[in-house]
Image 1 (cartoon, protein in one colour):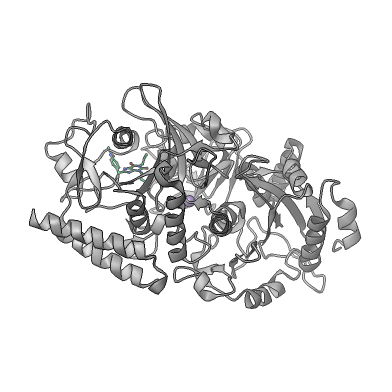
Image 2: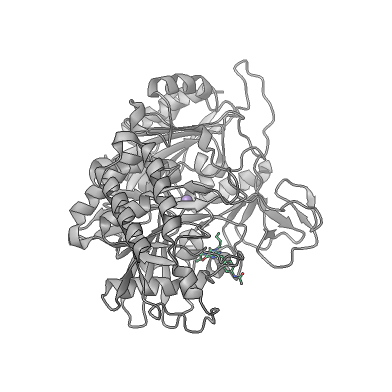
Length: 612
Ligand code: TSX
Ligand code: MN
């Protein structure tokens, strides 16, 4: 039987505010679940929901990893769906040319019939959560309503979820409402019941954001950013709008703390498009003696000017939702070691002895596996055993590299911002921006080569400004203007901006740079620069190291590697400048004048290099 308003009011915890109970009641009257359950975030609750998910067949317990489970999604529900992601602002120009726009009233008119009865036969779970440390000044609250236990258990790892967040909401703090349904009711309007499936979802999907009313409605998918609404939907798309209006930054950036041999501590944030190894960088083990990296976050940074005028960052998340394939003891031992207990694995392969495996975990694949679709798999199968976008969900503090400051509500002061992409040519290993505005230009023009997993021809360039292309909740050109405004406010307290590229290749297609732990060498140079310890060479893309200043001790790089890593060809950069001009043209007269100025200055540097 569908739950009624009286039952909901009677079942609500005492700490729940009247406006929250009223909203839950409204959504329950629309979606018509059998029951409403208020999550408290306790371990008892976690254990009960895990047991329920095991009993239903959705969660497969992993004998080798205590408290860990394998989940296989529907093969048609394996990733975020950008084509079904909408920014529903009143004006189309406020979504901009890089977002799918829909009129908010029309979208609501489309969604309401879909949500009507969408939870029949299921339980509606109320998930109060905090993005960022509970009660922190930079932190923000939200409530997700969902009909998926998988979502509840993932949100419990990825956010601070439960009674304490509910209490803060009850005390009147601001919160964002977010509604999620997998769109697979177990009972139809006539009362006919059907069996559940292990991964309920709907062919039709809508991931919708309402930036003016600041709400999120997600229909039809149970996977990742489509369903864990605190992450991309709230912490980036909605938060970027809050940040614009309130003068802060909500960014797709990792945060790390790095300590040098002299004990000096620095904090960096870094934005990279997908498939550049952000989680690996966040958990870096430097190869240069005396350096240590600690992790604050691997995906999202919320940054705000502190009382001392500097920019402070928090990680709004509480866990890592990382891509599994490629994670190994060689590429990221810290991540792998974090996964030995209390981890949810989605769409990886199952070994015969009750463990998980994915491509790249070990050099030799096991002789037999059950693949992510549930079929027998051998190394001769000719298909990957794990989906390329398979994931682990793990609490952040299970990583041995977690920084003690990761839960500091005031955040960490940022010294350096990195922008990177996967570029086989043109972009040097590292270059320092001439100033903040040049850094914003660099961020706005970030591009990355297409990998086999993504749409578009392999090797073709995809622009991904600030790595925010699918995550900016408003017009990208207005977002660039916001970055210029923030720089003005920060003045000489602003972090220094650098561009990096770990992925440059020689003419034969060999990697020029060893990457991974050796990336600390590039970071070391950046820190020596901000300390004024080394000179630099003015170049087309920015200031590059004087040969010999980049620490390559013990690397045994082939002769001529420095020249190849830092080669800047004026002809190739002239082509890049033309492409940038074309790209900016897509945004019409919204493009901040300063970006045109920066493009002119780039062209002047190209011209000067041609003469030289
Ligand atoms: O994550 C990567 N990083 C950042 C690490 C902190 N990857 C993995 C691919 C992205 C998901 C890298 N791959 C990096 C890198 O810096 N660099 C490369 C390219 C590369 C791959 C292998 C080797 C060298 C460079 N060397 C050998 O295989 C021996
Ligand atoms: Mn991300």
